[in-house]
Image (cartoon, rainbow, N blue to C red; front, side, top):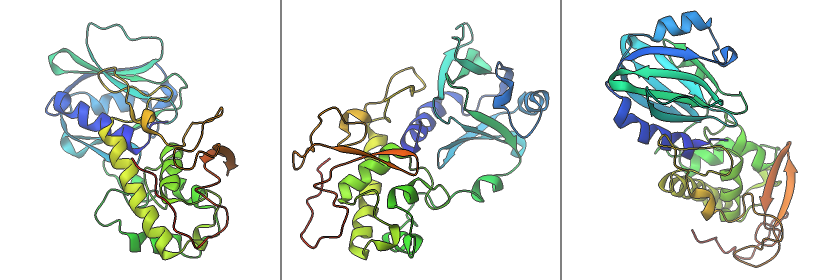
Length: 284
């Protein structure tokens, strides 16, 4: 599913083409993707509005519009936003089309129909459900220590909890934990300050690298121009099974289920129990 790096890539690549342009019309082919209002209210509220800027909060893409309106999109499991010309015929997986000035259109492509969008005057609904941004300067190692303090849940589950940290999904949680040498089933409150500091650094490095590589196209994610991201080619453990070996110690990688999510890890570099010897950090 699109996680922070994928949504950030969409924001960066879409903004130069649509900021400053007004919305001419909208076609919604899957009405259940519109939440918070009727489809007609949604369409009426969008037509004529100008895109002032694009933003992101966690995995949510935010269109800041004129007159204080915000169009929020969540791509969920299989969504992509493709930039097209008005003359381009949408494929069968396009659930909505937003037509802009100068003959440009945004196609919301979503094969699994899980994506949603809504129009709102403020962002309170997001702030109430999302934790800090992991790439923000305010997200320090000390902040992460406090967030994980006394937590009994597995660290993998805590990284996926958007109330705790916004934007990290399954792929990048696996990569960050491997880079930090931490087993996904270790309780969050069991981690030492040193381990959490290492994890904090790994989270930021993993996400930064994924943004640089334009996200990971392991399934249905496409960039606005239709290209794929290449971050998945750099993965150390995520989605790597079938006899794949750890790039550090050459032990076969394993997969475990953590709170109903598949987790990939190296049993050698990421021991289940604490150990005192220094861990070798994966090179990126």
